[in-house]
Image 1 (tube, helix red, strand yellow):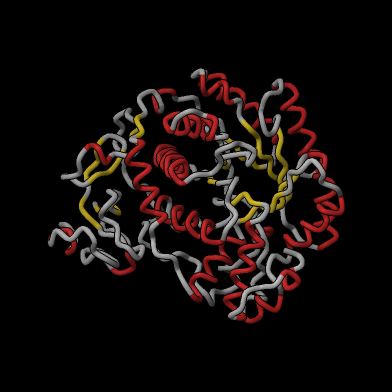
Image 2 (image 1 turned 135 degrees about the vertical axis):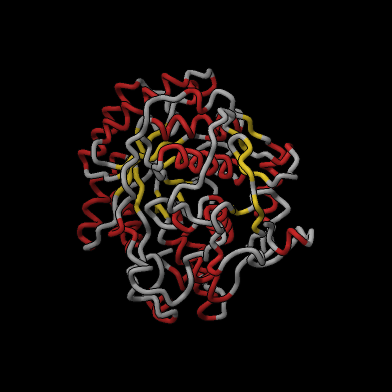
Length: 426
Protein backbone atom coordinates (compact mmCIF):
# COMPACT_ATOMS: atom_id res chain seq x y z
CA UNK A 1 0.00 0.00 0.00
CA UNK A 2 1.16 3.59 -0.46
CA UNK A 3 3.09 5.39 2.22
CA UNK A 4 1.36 7.75 4.64
CA UNK A 5 2.27 10.78 2.58
CA UNK A 6 0.71 9.33 -0.57
CA UNK A 7 -2.44 8.16 1.28
CA UNK A 8 -2.88 11.67 2.55
CA UNK A 9 -2.32 13.11 -0.91
CA UNK A 10 0.67 15.05 0.39
CA UNK A 11 3.09 15.33 -2.54
CA UNK A 12 5.62 17.28 -0.45
CA UNK A 13 6.07 14.73 2.29
CA UNK A 14 9.46 15.32 3.90
CA UNK A 15 11.83 12.69 5.20
CA UNK A 16 11.32 8.95 4.87
CA UNK A 17 7.83 7.92 3.82
CA UNK A 18 5.72 6.40 6.60
CA UNK A 19 5.42 3.18 4.63
CA UNK A 20 9.19 2.71 4.36
CA UNK A 21 10.78 0.10 6.59
CA UNK A 22 13.62 0.96 8.95
CA UNK A 23 16.79 1.98 7.14
CA UNK A 24 14.88 3.48 4.24
CA UNK A 25 15.00 0.34 2.05
CA UNK A 26 11.83 -0.48 0.12
CA UNK A 27 9.89 -3.62 0.91
CA UNK A 28 9.48 -6.20 -1.83
CA UNK A 29 7.30 -4.73 -4.52
CA UNK A 30 8.21 -1.16 -3.59
CA UNK A 31 10.55 1.22 -5.37
CA UNK A 32 11.65 4.82 -4.79
CA UNK A 33 9.19 7.20 -6.42
CA UNK A 34 10.80 8.67 -9.55
CA UNK A 35 7.98 11.01 -10.43
CA UNK A 36 9.14 14.64 -10.11
CA UNK A 37 6.94 16.34 -7.54
CA UNK A 38 6.97 13.46 -5.05
CA UNK A 39 10.42 14.30 -3.70
CA UNK A 40 10.88 15.99 -0.35
CA UNK A 41 12.83 19.21 -0.04
CA UNK A 42 15.47 17.69 2.26
CA UNK A 43 16.52 14.76 0.14
CA UNK A 44 14.01 12.32 1.66
CA UNK A 45 11.75 10.41 -0.67
CA UNK A 46 8.15 9.35 -0.63
CA UNK A 47 7.72 5.62 -1.30
CA UNK A 48 4.79 4.57 -3.43
CA UNK A 49 3.69 1.27 -4.88
CA UNK A 50 4.82 1.48 -8.50
CA UNK A 51 4.08 -0.54 -11.59
CA UNK A 52 6.31 -1.31 -14.54
CA UNK A 53 5.36 0.73 -17.58
CA UNK A 54 7.62 0.03 -20.55
CA UNK A 55 11.16 0.88 -19.56
CA UNK A 56 10.41 3.11 -16.60
CA UNK A 57 8.61 2.82 -13.26
CA UNK A 58 5.74 5.21 -12.68
CA UNK A 59 2.93 5.61 -10.17
CA UNK A 60 -0.34 4.26 -11.55
CA UNK A 61 -1.73 7.79 -11.76
CA UNK A 62 1.36 9.36 -13.31
CA UNK A 63 0.66 11.07 -16.63
CA UNK A 64 2.63 9.87 -19.64
CA UNK A 65 4.25 13.31 -19.91
CA UNK A 66 6.30 12.53 -16.80
CA UNK A 67 8.11 9.67 -18.48
CA UNK A 68 11.73 10.85 -18.68
CA UNK A 69 13.54 8.13 -20.57
CA UNK A 70 12.10 4.94 -22.05
CA UNK A 71 14.03 2.22 -23.83
CA UNK A 72 10.89 1.25 -25.68
CA UNK A 73 11.68 -2.41 -26.27
CA UNK A 74 9.08 -3.62 -23.80
CA UNK A 75 11.24 -5.81 -21.57
CA UNK A 76 9.95 -6.09 -18.01
CA UNK A 77 12.17 -4.63 -15.33
CA UNK A 78 12.93 -5.98 -11.89
CA UNK A 79 15.24 -4.72 -9.22
CA UNK A 80 18.26 -7.05 -9.23
CA UNK A 81 19.79 -8.14 -5.93
CA UNK A 82 22.01 -5.45 -4.47
CA UNK A 83 20.54 -2.47 -6.30
CA UNK A 84 20.78 0.35 -3.75
CA UNK A 85 17.73 2.38 -2.81
CA UNK A 86 17.94 6.13 -3.32
CA UNK A 87 16.81 6.67 0.24
CA UNK A 88 20.04 5.38 1.79
CA UNK A 89 22.40 7.72 3.61
CA UNK A 90 24.97 9.66 1.59
CA UNK A 91 27.81 7.47 2.77
CA UNK A 92 29.89 10.56 3.44
CA UNK A 93 29.23 11.22 7.11
CA UNK A 94 31.96 12.60 9.36
CA UNK A 95 33.82 10.31 11.70
CA UNK A 96 33.87 7.30 9.42
CA UNK A 97 36.45 4.55 9.84
CA UNK A 98 39.61 4.41 7.79
CA UNK A 99 38.05 1.65 5.69
CA UNK A 100 35.20 4.00 4.81
CA UNK A 101 37.64 6.70 3.73
CA UNK A 102 40.12 4.44 1.96
CA UNK A 103 42.53 6.15 -0.38
CA UNK A 104 41.25 6.30 -3.92
CA UNK A 105 44.64 5.34 -5.32
CA UNK A 106 44.66 2.05 -3.44
CA UNK A 107 40.97 1.32 -4.04
CA UNK A 108 41.49 0.68 -7.77
CA UNK A 109 38.63 0.49 -10.22
CA UNK A 110 35.49 -1.62 -10.16
CA UNK A 111 35.33 -4.98 -11.90
CA UNK A 112 35.81 -4.69 -15.65
CA UNK A 113 32.79 -4.32 -17.88
CA UNK A 114 33.23 -7.12 -20.40
CA UNK A 115 30.54 -5.66 -22.63
CA UNK A 116 27.87 -7.50 -24.60
CA UNK A 117 27.02 -8.29 -28.18
CA UNK A 118 25.55 -5.36 -30.08
CA UNK A 119 21.82 -5.17 -29.31
CA UNK A 120 20.30 -2.48 -31.52
CA UNK A 121 16.87 -3.38 -30.16
CA UNK A 122 17.86 -1.68 -26.90
CA UNK A 123 18.09 1.71 -28.63
CA UNK A 124 15.80 1.36 -31.64
CA UNK A 125 12.77 3.02 -30.02
CA UNK A 126 14.32 5.31 -27.44
CA UNK A 127 12.20 8.28 -26.38
CA UNK A 128 13.48 11.09 -24.16
CA UNK A 129 11.02 13.59 -22.75
CA UNK A 130 13.34 16.59 -22.83
CA UNK A 131 11.06 19.06 -20.97
CA UNK A 132 10.62 16.55 -18.13
CA UNK A 133 14.37 15.91 -17.97
CA UNK A 134 15.08 19.64 -17.85
CA UNK A 135 12.46 20.18 -15.11
CA UNK A 136 13.97 17.34 -13.10
CA UNK A 137 17.44 18.92 -13.44
CA UNK A 138 16.07 22.29 -12.32
CA UNK A 139 14.57 20.67 -9.22
CA UNK A 140 17.94 19.16 -8.37
CA UNK A 141 19.56 22.60 -8.47
CA UNK A 142 16.96 23.85 -5.97
CA UNK A 143 17.70 21.21 -3.36
CA UNK A 144 18.76 22.70 -0.05
CA UNK A 145 22.55 22.73 0.32
CA UNK A 146 24.05 20.75 3.18
CA UNK A 147 25.85 22.78 5.84
CA UNK A 148 28.42 22.39 8.59
CA UNK A 149 30.02 19.01 9.20
CA UNK A 150 27.85 17.38 6.57
CA UNK A 151 29.04 19.81 3.92
CA UNK A 152 32.66 19.12 4.88
CA UNK A 153 31.98 15.36 4.64
CA UNK A 154 30.44 15.68 1.17
CA UNK A 155 33.38 17.80 0.04
CA UNK A 156 35.93 15.26 1.28
CA UNK A 157 33.97 12.59 -0.56
CA UNK A 158 34.17 14.74 -3.71
CA UNK A 159 37.96 15.06 -3.30
CA UNK A 160 38.37 11.27 -3.35
CA UNK A 161 36.44 11.13 -6.65
CA UNK A 162 38.39 13.81 -8.54
CA UNK A 163 40.49 13.03 -11.59
CA UNK A 164 42.96 15.89 -11.16
CA UNK A 165 43.64 17.05 -14.68
CA UNK A 166 46.06 19.15 -16.69
CA UNK A 167 45.51 19.14 -20.46
CA UNK A 168 47.23 22.29 -21.62
CA UNK A 169 49.56 22.85 -24.52
CA UNK A 170 52.17 24.32 -22.18
CA UNK A 171 52.33 21.34 -19.78
CA UNK A 172 55.88 20.62 -18.63
CA UNK A 173 57.43 17.97 -16.34
CA UNK A 174 57.59 20.54 -13.54
CA UNK A 175 53.89 21.43 -13.47
CA UNK A 176 52.95 17.74 -13.83
CA UNK A 177 55.18 17.02 -10.81
CA UNK A 178 53.48 19.81 -8.87
CA UNK A 179 50.04 18.43 -9.75
CA UNK A 180 51.05 14.93 -8.63
CA UNK A 181 52.21 16.30 -5.27
CA UNK A 182 48.83 18.01 -4.90
CA UNK A 183 47.10 14.76 -5.85
CA UNK A 184 48.70 13.03 -2.88
CA UNK A 185 48.05 15.98 -0.52
CA UNK A 186 44.77 17.48 -1.83
CA UNK A 187 43.87 19.18 1.48
CA UNK A 188 46.29 20.89 3.85
CA UNK A 189 47.37 18.53 6.62
CA UNK A 190 46.45 20.89 9.46
CA UNK A 191 42.91 21.26 8.08
CA UNK A 192 42.49 17.49 7.98
CA UNK A 193 43.81 17.19 11.55
CA UNK A 194 41.27 19.76 12.72
CA UNK A 195 38.53 17.48 11.34
CA UNK A 196 40.22 14.30 12.62
CA UNK A 197 40.58 13.07 9.04
CA UNK A 198 44.39 13.20 8.71
CA UNK A 199 44.81 9.43 9.01
CA UNK A 200 42.10 8.38 6.55
CA UNK A 201 44.34 8.32 3.48
CA UNK A 202 42.42 10.94 1.52
CA UNK A 203 43.82 11.46 -1.99
CA UNK A 204 42.31 12.24 -5.37
CA UNK A 205 41.15 9.31 -7.49
CA UNK A 206 43.63 9.75 -10.36
CA UNK A 207 45.70 12.27 -12.29
CA UNK A 208 44.90 12.81 -15.97
CA UNK A 209 47.41 14.04 -18.56
CA UNK A 210 48.27 13.82 -22.26
CA UNK A 211 50.13 10.66 -23.41
CA UNK A 212 53.40 12.59 -23.71
CA UNK A 213 53.25 13.46 -20.00
CA UNK A 214 52.30 10.00 -18.69
CA UNK A 215 55.90 9.03 -17.91
CA UNK A 216 56.42 12.28 -15.96
CA UNK A 217 53.27 11.62 -13.91
CA UNK A 218 54.17 7.97 -13.23
CA UNK A 219 57.68 8.90 -12.07
CA UNK A 220 56.41 11.75 -9.87
CA UNK A 221 53.83 9.56 -8.13
CA UNK A 222 56.34 6.76 -7.67
CA UNK A 223 58.79 9.22 -6.09
CA UNK A 224 56.01 10.43 -3.80
CA UNK A 225 55.40 6.85 -2.65
CA UNK A 226 51.72 6.63 -3.58
CA UNK A 227 49.70 4.34 -5.80
CA UNK A 228 47.39 6.90 -7.42
CA UNK A 229 46.67 5.73 -10.98
CA UNK A 230 47.64 7.81 -14.00
CA UNK A 231 44.93 8.36 -16.61
CA UNK A 232 45.71 9.47 -20.14
CA UNK A 233 43.48 10.94 -22.81
CA UNK A 234 43.87 9.24 -26.17
CA UNK A 235 42.17 8.25 -29.44
CA UNK A 236 42.43 11.66 -31.07
CA UNK A 237 41.48 13.75 -28.04
CA UNK A 238 39.63 16.12 -28.09
CA UNK A 239 38.10 16.08 -31.58
CA UNK A 240 38.34 12.38 -32.40
CA UNK A 241 39.06 13.34 -36.01
CA UNK A 242 41.97 10.97 -36.54
CA UNK A 243 42.15 7.60 -38.36
CA UNK A 244 41.30 4.56 -36.27
CA UNK A 245 44.80 3.13 -36.72
CA UNK A 246 46.29 6.29 -35.19
CA UNK A 247 43.82 6.16 -32.29
CA UNK A 248 44.72 2.56 -31.48
CA UNK A 249 48.46 3.29 -31.68
CA UNK A 250 48.07 6.25 -29.32
CA UNK A 251 46.16 4.11 -26.80
CA UNK A 252 48.82 1.40 -26.88
CA UNK A 253 51.61 3.96 -26.38
CA UNK A 254 49.84 5.51 -23.38
CA UNK A 255 49.46 2.07 -21.80
CA UNK A 256 53.08 1.28 -22.56
CA UNK A 257 54.16 4.51 -20.82
CA UNK A 258 52.35 3.41 -17.65
CA UNK A 259 48.77 4.73 -17.88
CA UNK A 260 46.33 2.55 -15.94
CA UNK A 261 43.23 4.36 -17.20
CA UNK A 262 42.54 5.56 -20.75
CA UNK A 263 40.02 8.29 -21.60
CA UNK A 264 39.07 7.83 -25.26
CA UNK A 265 36.83 10.04 -27.38
CA UNK A 266 34.23 8.74 -29.80
CA UNK A 267 33.75 9.82 -33.41
CA UNK A 268 30.76 12.13 -33.11
CA UNK A 269 30.03 11.78 -36.83
CA UNK A 270 29.09 8.13 -36.30
CA UNK A 271 26.45 9.18 -33.76
CA UNK A 272 25.07 12.03 -35.83
CA UNK A 273 24.73 9.77 -38.88
CA UNK A 274 23.28 6.86 -36.91
CA UNK A 275 26.13 4.42 -37.68
CA UNK A 276 25.73 2.52 -34.42
CA UNK A 277 27.39 -0.69 -35.59
CA UNK A 278 30.49 1.21 -36.72
CA UNK A 279 30.58 3.08 -33.40
CA UNK A 280 30.33 -0.20 -31.50
CA UNK A 281 33.19 -1.75 -33.50
CA UNK A 282 35.42 1.31 -33.03
CA UNK A 283 34.94 1.43 -29.25
CA UNK A 284 35.39 -2.34 -29.06
CA UNK A 285 38.76 -2.10 -30.81
CA UNK A 286 39.79 0.71 -28.46
CA UNK A 287 38.80 -1.51 -25.53
CA UNK A 288 41.04 -4.30 -26.83
CA UNK A 289 43.93 -1.83 -27.33
CA UNK A 290 43.62 -0.76 -23.68
CA UNK A 291 44.53 -4.24 -22.47
CA UNK A 292 44.44 -4.28 -18.67
CA UNK A 293 43.93 -0.49 -18.45
CA UNK A 294 40.41 0.65 -17.63
CA UNK A 295 38.66 2.59 -20.38
CA UNK A 296 36.54 5.71 -19.99
CA UNK A 297 34.60 6.69 -23.09
CA UNK A 298 34.04 10.41 -23.67
CA UNK A 299 30.78 11.06 -25.51
CA UNK A 300 31.27 14.82 -26.05
CA UNK A 301 27.55 15.25 -25.34
CA UNK A 302 27.52 18.92 -26.33
CA UNK A 303 28.12 17.84 -29.93
CA UNK A 304 25.67 14.92 -30.20
CA UNK A 305 22.64 16.98 -31.16
CA UNK A 306 19.96 15.54 -28.83
CA UNK A 307 19.40 13.80 -25.51
CA UNK A 308 18.17 10.73 -27.40
CA UNK A 309 21.56 10.50 -29.11
CA UNK A 310 23.23 10.86 -25.70
CA UNK A 311 21.24 7.88 -24.40
CA UNK A 312 21.95 5.77 -27.49
CA UNK A 313 25.67 6.58 -27.50
CA UNK A 314 25.84 5.75 -23.78
CA UNK A 315 24.27 2.33 -24.36
CA UNK A 316 26.52 1.54 -27.34
CA UNK A 317 29.63 2.54 -25.37
CA UNK A 318 28.64 0.24 -22.50
CA UNK A 319 27.81 -2.64 -24.83
CA UNK A 320 31.30 -2.23 -26.34
CA UNK A 321 32.93 -2.65 -22.93
CA UNK A 322 33.46 0.85 -21.53
CA UNK A 323 34.24 0.82 -17.81
CA UNK A 324 33.10 4.47 -17.51
CA UNK A 325 31.09 6.80 -19.67
CA UNK A 326 32.13 10.44 -19.53
CA UNK A 327 30.23 13.53 -20.55
CA UNK A 328 32.77 15.81 -22.22
CA UNK A 329 36.35 16.55 -23.10
CA UNK A 330 36.15 19.96 -21.43
CA UNK A 331 37.00 21.56 -24.78
CA UNK A 332 33.47 21.81 -26.17
CA UNK A 333 31.26 24.89 -25.93
CA UNK A 334 28.78 22.92 -23.79
CA UNK A 335 30.25 20.48 -21.29
CA UNK A 336 28.74 18.59 -18.33
CA UNK A 337 25.12 19.59 -17.68
CA UNK A 338 22.62 18.08 -15.27
CA UNK A 339 20.04 17.05 -17.93
CA UNK A 340 22.75 15.15 -19.79
CA UNK A 341 23.83 13.59 -16.49
CA UNK A 342 20.28 12.40 -15.79
CA UNK A 343 20.00 10.73 -19.20
CA UNK A 344 23.43 9.06 -18.97
CA UNK A 345 22.69 7.76 -15.47
CA UNK A 346 19.35 6.34 -16.62
CA UNK A 347 21.29 4.54 -19.37
CA UNK A 348 23.75 3.17 -16.78
CA UNK A 349 20.85 1.97 -14.66
CA UNK A 350 19.17 0.36 -17.66
CA UNK A 351 22.40 -1.41 -18.66
CA UNK A 352 22.82 -2.68 -15.10
CA UNK A 353 19.27 -4.03 -15.05
CA UNK A 354 19.86 -5.76 -18.40
CA UNK A 355 23.32 -7.25 -17.76
CA UNK A 356 24.21 -6.95 -14.06
CA UNK A 357 27.37 -4.98 -15.01
CA UNK A 358 28.07 -1.75 -13.15
CA UNK A 359 29.50 1.01 -15.33
CA UNK A 360 30.98 4.18 -13.85
CA UNK A 361 29.98 7.76 -14.60
CA UNK A 362 32.26 10.77 -15.01
CA UNK A 363 31.00 14.32 -15.56
CA UNK A 364 33.79 16.57 -16.80
CA UNK A 365 34.16 20.11 -18.05
CA UNK A 366 32.90 23.27 -16.38
CA UNK A 367 32.72 21.83 -12.83
CA UNK A 368 34.58 24.50 -10.90
CA UNK A 369 32.84 25.08 -7.56
CA UNK A 370 32.28 23.01 -4.43
CA UNK A 371 28.53 23.57 -4.72
CA UNK A 372 28.50 22.10 -8.23
CA UNK A 373 30.48 19.07 -7.01
CA UNK A 374 27.97 18.41 -4.21
CA UNK A 375 25.09 18.74 -6.69
CA UNK A 376 26.64 16.06 -8.88
CA UNK A 377 27.19 13.80 -5.88
CA UNK A 378 23.57 14.21 -4.82
CA UNK A 379 22.38 13.48 -8.35
CA UNK A 380 24.42 10.27 -8.47
CA UNK A 381 23.06 9.22 -5.06
CA UNK A 382 19.52 9.95 -6.20
CA UNK A 383 19.74 8.21 -9.59
CA UNK A 384 22.16 5.33 -8.99
CA UNK A 385 22.39 4.96 -5.22
CA UNK A 386 25.14 5.02 -2.63
CA UNK A 387 27.00 2.14 -4.29
CA UNK A 388 28.08 4.51 -7.05
CA UNK A 389 29.42 7.12 -4.60
CA UNK A 390 32.97 5.80 -4.66
CA UNK A 391 35.93 6.41 -6.99
CA UNK A 392 35.56 2.96 -8.54
CA UNK A 393 32.24 4.05 -10.09
CA UNK A 394 32.16 7.85 -9.99
CA UNK A 395 34.71 10.47 -11.00
CA UNK A 396 34.72 14.23 -11.35
CA UNK A 397 36.93 15.48 -14.16
CA UNK A 398 38.29 18.86 -13.08
CA UNK A 399 41.38 21.04 -13.06
CA UNK A 400 40.30 23.94 -10.82
CA UNK A 401 37.60 22.33 -8.65
CA UNK A 402 40.01 21.20 -5.93
CA UNK A 403 41.03 24.80 -5.23
CA UNK A 404 37.47 25.86 -4.40
CA UNK A 405 36.85 22.74 -2.30
CA UNK A 406 39.95 23.44 -0.22
CA UNK A 407 38.82 27.04 0.26
CA UNK A 408 35.44 25.87 1.54
CA UNK A 409 37.09 23.42 3.95
CA UNK A 410 39.44 26.16 5.14
CA UNK A 411 36.41 28.35 5.89
CA UNK A 412 34.67 25.45 7.67
CA UNK A 413 37.68 24.86 9.94
CA UNK A 414 38.83 28.43 10.62
CA UNK A 415 35.65 30.47 10.16
CA UNK A 416 37.46 32.87 7.81
CA UNK A 417 38.08 32.92 4.10
CA UNK A 418 41.49 31.88 2.78
CA UNK A 419 43.94 34.47 1.52
CA UNK A 420 45.96 33.72 -1.56
CA UNK A 421 49.06 32.68 0.39
CA UNK A 422 47.07 30.38 2.71
CA UNK A 423 46.57 27.75 0.01
CA UNK A 424 49.68 28.14 -2.07
CA UNK A 425 49.49 24.64 -3.57
CA UNK A 426 45.84 24.89 -4.63
